[in-house]
Structure formats: structure tokens, C-alpha cells
Length: 275
Image (cartoon, rainbow, N blue to C red):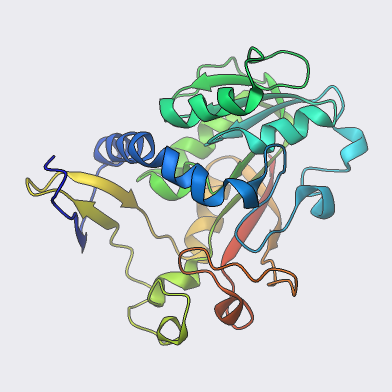
């Protein structure tokens, strides 16, 4: 792609294959900038569910931290494995999976040369969330903080794969952009407070190059769609958490900001258990 070309933003259909290819390429190209811009907020071993700053240490959505010891946990769309590193610090045995090779290289950078899977470090796996390279029932828990689910055309396939590798009764917790955000412009200021599109328009957001090839794809599902996906994937919905914007967080992150966060939800966290 011509590096001088600014990708065109549009709304159009995008297949699972096209979405996967675009996600791998986008994160490989942008991992350095992403980690540089957000690395301080994310920390090296912090488990944060979204831009609001809700920590798993506070929320306990995977269960009490004291009960994580010895648990085998799969993180989907792990990025630089910050969440998995926090889990390892609690005594869990995490596996950090991501589609992007460059994101996982940042996980190795943070580890400071320690091999993946070493004491206090998660095991790293490069793979597609829709085809998990693990045996049935090989994990106790699974989690995903803004990973994979928003970027796939067939979320049920991912959910079924996660269900397959979880033991019966295992918990899967994942966060995504709150569906209501799709009706508003992705702006942190006042311009982001007026409805500009139909909440019910499920057409994917696509950025494409001059040849019409997708270089970034994100898929919209309504709250009802997400709930139905969870059930179709073989899970029972235990809770739906909508984090409120905390007073301490003055950061703007894309379309997230204190202004918007005090008025409309920015993140939805689905707490599910294998049926």
C-alpha cells in the first residue's frame, strides 16, 4: 500500500477472512504506536478492562484474586500480555494468545528477555481466535479485554471455540466497545454527544486502501445481538457490566473522555459461564 495514501473510511460488508487479514496487518503495523501511546495507562502487569480504567483487581469478574492460583487461563487478543502478566502474578497459569506477531514481540520486550512461560510470565501463542490450537476443556477461565470479539465477522464461532477449550462451568469474561457508541461520532468532545447514525445499522466500519482492500475492520452488534451470540456460543450470561467513568481518570483515548464517560457508557463487559 502507498504509505502516503490515507485509508478511506466507509461502512460495508467484510467477510471473516477479510476481517482477520485486516486485523493482523493493522496490529502488526500499529503495535509500536499503540504501546507507546497507551503503554503507561495499561502498565506492564495491570489487568484493565477498558479506557475507563476498571481493574480486574478491583472488579473480580473472573473470581476472587486469591482463587486464581493454579488456574489455567486463556487470554484472547492479549496484545502485549499485560492482563496475562497480572494473572501470572496472582499465581495463575495464563496463556496469552494474539493474532499479531508484533504485539507479542512487545510482550517479550516487557518480559525483559525472560522466556515466555517462565515463572511470572505467560505463555505466548500466535493464533486466530476462531481456530484455537488447544484441546477441549484445557482451561479453567478465559478473558478478553477489547480483544478479537469486536474485529471478527462471526463472533459466535469465536465464542464456540472458547467454550470448547473451557472446562464445564468455566467462566469467560470479555469487554467490547459499548454498542450504544456506534450511534455517536467517535469524538471525545461535544461533537461526540449527538446521535449521528442508527444504532441498528450493523454494517461494519471499514478502512480500505486505494485498491479497496480492507486494512481495518470493526463489527457492530447491538446489546441484544451480543447476548444472543453468548447463548449461541454455549454460554450463560451471568452479568453485564457497564463501567462508570471514575473521577481520577482525566485521560482522553480515542472517543473516550471524561465528558462522554459521565453521560454515556463506553465499555460493555460480558460475564459468561460455560453452559
